[in-house]
Image (tube, rainbow, N blue to C red; front, side, top):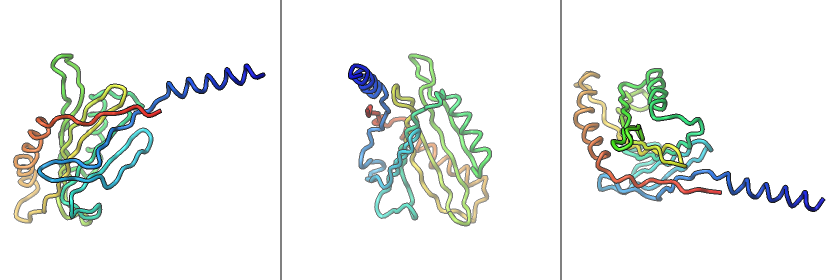
Length: 194
């Protein structure tokens, strides 16, 4: 009887050692655009973890810019193309004014290893500003998909029609931010948690 208990305990111990989950190594603050963004909210929901950063004096209810780090542990084993297709379907079926997602290809391996893009939300009664989300994400081995997203709210201009506003946002905000993200050192990695 004692041997059976010892065998069961050993098996449980070994399975606990093998079953590790990834945890994003998240900083308490991020410097971006000469601002310091501090983590305000961190939610780990199992398959997905989100961390939201704001700079002072912004709050969750009233902010002008924010950063979000996302960890998708990729339990569905989606590749980058599937991830892009899923997001495009979601954006088409919601109130997104404009979006573009592009796979990031590794030149050495010739495989998609990440994605970059933007999403623009039009003003609503609740949120009277345009919201622009610019993102870059990478597939990290033994971790999942990690995404850095910079979001900015832009005051609605009554002088410009929607088409002109979208052109303006793409030219003066999105293009600039995409260049900055493209040059930014990737600093987000995972650690194994047992």
